[in-house]
Image (cartoon, rainbow, N blue to C red; front, side, top):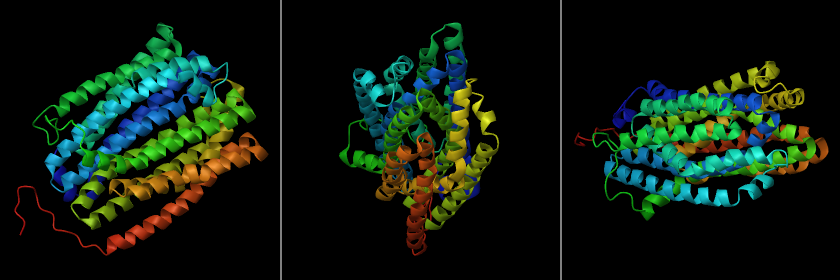
Amino acid sequence: MASPVELGRGDLRKLLLAYSGPAILAMMASSIYNIIDSIFIGHGVGALALSGLAITMPIMNLSAAFGAMVGAGGATLTSIKMGQQDYDGATHVLGNVVTLNLILGFALMFLGLFFIDELLYLFGASSETIPYAHDFMQIILIGNPVTHLYLGLNNEIRASGYPQKAMRITLLTVVINAVLAPIFIFSFNWGIRGAALATVLAQTVALIIVIIHLSNKNNFLHFKRGTFSINKRITSGILSIGMAPFTLHTCSCIIVILINNQLAKHGGDMAVGAYGVVNRLVMFFATVVMGLNQGMQPIAGFNYGAQIYSRVRKVLKLTIIYGILVMTIAFALGETIPGLLVKMFTNDEELIAQSTLGLRITVIIFPLVGYQMVTSNFFQSIGKAPTAVLLSASRQLLLLIPLLAILPNYLGTLGVWIAMPISDGLSTILSFILLKREMKKFRKMEDKPFTLPDEPSN
């Protein structure tokens, strides 16, 4: 599907599958790799290495926050401008995405390397887990500019009408990762550093392919001279739209810090490791919904820009249905076979017991989480940044932080685990209220007739 004009006239169900299918496959494959990588580390390095890996999550989330702010914001703005048939404007968005990613990528690399140990101790590391966390994070931070640029530009490829190519590029990183990681960990005895190096090398190869694609002048969206200098209006649009995913990832960073510290305080290093295991399992299903959201984003953004509001409503409804279905499956598996899932990662009995309990509690309200995730992303997709930011922040900053501060004092590690489903339920209620209000506005708006770029308007 190389022409973005299909977004304004094609069958919505087929479009959603065409755009989200590749994203889902790519993100699932990436999530599977993270699971396999953790299995390699858990069995090849040890249970404490899994705890060290969990300690690095806040830094990873913070880096992802800045990457998502530029990548998701740029992709959404690109879709809207293509819906408005402003292809020159979309090209300038691409150029600004490149420049912003380079600036942020290098800035975070230098700051992270300079304060790496201080940050890791702040995030819950102990004297036993800091060596593993340091070795892993040092390599990841060195590759941070590559990661930012690859993810941001791959979003642009997807938004410009090439979802399958974006998927293939992501799948390539997974394959390279999966091949190199066991070689580096087991054959070369590089331990957790080997896992990090495999990730960076895979993303470097992917970035080269992305750059080659966007250098092709025959594509709808491609690099053009004079578009890389920072444009205040475009940059402001990218960052304002991208503020929702930025807030989401930043909140995740803060939340993981609090969770790690509370678990370390009340349960020790194994409790921290249990959260790392649970997080990787639940993220497998969450990435499916994220893939659905990525598929919805260009469709909703294009039709919103083209003022075809009925199509915006319909694609939202479809995405919500699929999102709820996916998270219901996660709920069923997490409640029926949690021990079987956890034992993939480790043979340590204490880690298995704590991870099993945590998984059962975490997924208990997951069907509602599917609705909340889609709703939050929808507001971002149509450029409603303030509402998207509010929904992104509500679950974590406004609800989860107070719960994490209070419940563990009375219930210990159990209080940490149950705080998460409680905040999920409350944030879903807020999402329902805000979406219902927005849909009332949509029903009053009339669709504008859609014309192709080369067709004259009547």
